Length: 63
Length: 143
Image 1 (cartoon, rainbow over the protein chains, first blue to last red):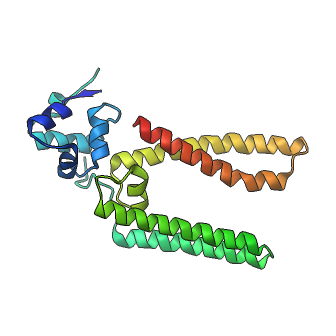
Image 2: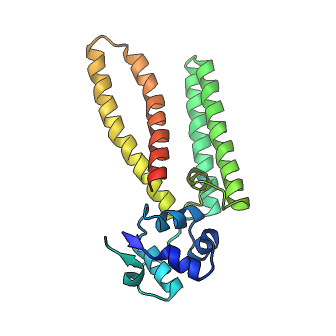
Image 3: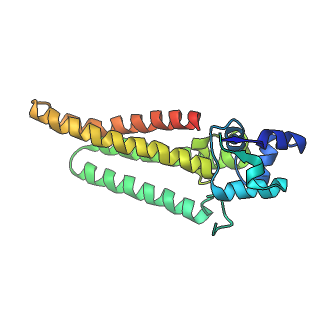
């Protein structure tokens, strides 16, 4: 599954660590999400969408 | 979605309880083995148990002081795992489960081929521990 997390994070001027702190996950988890190696749970996907003020569909795309 | 706690932090009390339970099992096992006349093995069990406790304590300290540099295993040992850490843990345990079924089948077959059953049984935990470590590393790197 592709996602827009890296682009959104950079637009917000956040590091992986600080985004992880905002979302309540580790920096490694943010990195894995950005590289597409890890698909988040539904609660985490909602948290990410809420943080960026977007819908889940605007952030995550099925390949 | 019925939870507002996506992070799976264990409470401090739960972490201490887990450590105490692990220590009690190790000491109880060591006592039983020692009373059966295997003092060296009992000492090994105590040493191994204490080593696990020390590593978990270091992991907890490291994950609170240098959270950014703490790895998956460190956060898990510290009881501060997030959802990806838990998934890595579960994935590696699933591999260990499959391997244990295969290994126990092979071990059972080996006893019919005149292999020493005691050696097989005693080597099984080490084989599964090695499997767990390898599986954890692979799953962690891939997720």
